[in-house]
Image (cartoon, rainbow, N blue to C red; front, side):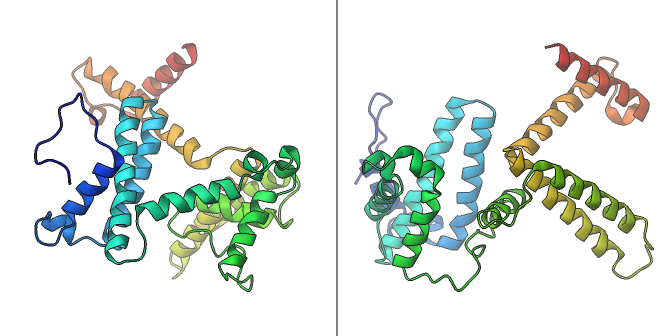
Amino acid sequence: MPDERAKPPTERYTLGELLSIMARLRDPETGCPWDVQQSYASIAPYTIEEAYEVADAIARDDLDALKEELGDLLLQVVYHAQMASEDERFGFADVVDGIARKMIRRHPHVFAGADREQFLTAGMWQHIKDEEKAERGVTAQGSRLDDVPLVLPALTRAVKLQTRAADVGFDWPSLGPVLEKAEEEIAELKAAIEGNEGEKNHAQRVAEEFGDLLFVMANIARHLHVDPEAALRGANAKFVRRFGSIEAALAKDGRKPEDATLEEMDQLWDEAKADETKT
């Protein structure tokens, strides 16, 4: 068990000590009341949030933040493993052993002397995953899409669903038809918008057509080998940056965006865009 006092900065804690810290936090009698009452379900949202914060630190190229966020994400693994240990289901060592074995098993071209090129071109990764499912008793009676997690961000899940379908040949052969499908979906969205707003299902139809368009855009991203979530994060960052330029320019005159006209803000936006192009 870790000492009551924190170690000085010159000394480092070990993974074993981190596991002991979590065990102590979860002790029913002497632990933290908040930590003791948590469950897998209540901690899961934090696990997802920490994964996003890791991605955010990477996107910002902030390695100091990345170090901290990776620690927060590791804590989530330790937390879930501690609860499973209390349930006598598995422990942290089992998690480590399982992932180590999985990596070795799924990379025979690295650890078992298999031909590297053949492995990469013959779809062996998916073949090995299918074998693992068979060993666990998972039958092929359901859809091959069933194990794409529902909790994934919608754009990411769309790409994964499309990739699974493409693996069995259900895919357009090139980008061209996908772009044509996007144009078709835009036309259908316009038609839905221009429909009778008084209709009972008008809003539902618009939302459905909008969803179809997003799904096709995810497919375009897949064909272009673009991560749609990363692309959208980049677009968000660009919007924040350029809108910040509008705010800064107006502040020089003692004004705020609500004090300016749309035409003024459009002009300042164009100027910010032009400045970015120069750099």
